[in-house]
Length: 87
Image (cartoon, rainbow, N blue to C red):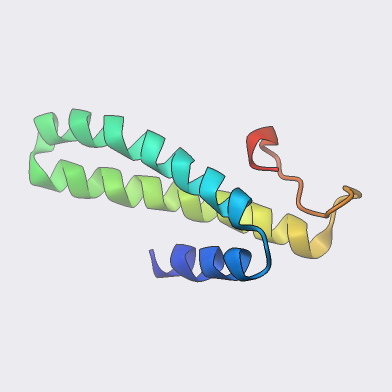
């Protein structure tokens, strides 16, 4: 979680807040249904597992976005990602 917060802050400071917002919205969209499903199966630990899984996906996506921004991929702003919605 700390890694995501740090990378998100770096993106916001550099003007990349829309990309960080899209990744955050993806995480929320993943976390809510998973938490509802896993809380029925595992109770409170299921909710924590859903949060951990969503955070792992968010960190992976933001890591891809950060790498693309540093390395560049021939895009005009160097911020394209493997997922078209995040670029």
